[in-house]
Length: 244
Image (tube, rainbow, N blue to C red):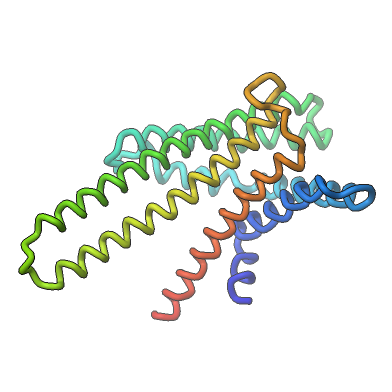
């Protein structure tokens, strides 16, 4: 119970759990009928609203993160640097515009929420596509490092000590773990992008062609990956704390 409790104590953990339940509920409306389908839809709607309300307070933490990255002067790879800045800018624009959507839906602001909602989807997709390209770039860099590591190992003298082999395995394991995490992040963002495009106005790619239940399959996949990642991070944190 330690990990679920730890996740529920944090905003990111609660949000991922709520997101997973929300999209799973929508996905289950596909095979469901009658009252069950209506109840699942209502549950998903309320959870989605709750998530939007909690994001009203996300501006400052998000701004601090973006400010901390700045223009990415520390980033060695210029491609990753540009993509990270683009993603951060899209996120910073997304949040205040989403507040307008919430205010319009709540009749606080006398305007239609639809154009603003479409704008948030476009900004979200810009961030997602930036992160997808960045993940592909990072995976290419990791592969390049792994190939060079293997080449250096093959060029070593056969008579060298076992310490060299231990160091090789350690470095390769680190790169393999980075590859695994980046691959999961890539799949997560691709799943979100498929879902996001479906919410765009009809006529753009596959917009509107997936039913809510089918579209929610991608949201569920993305949410489960995000939740799994948080669980693994929490496990590592607790293991580290025990060692201390």
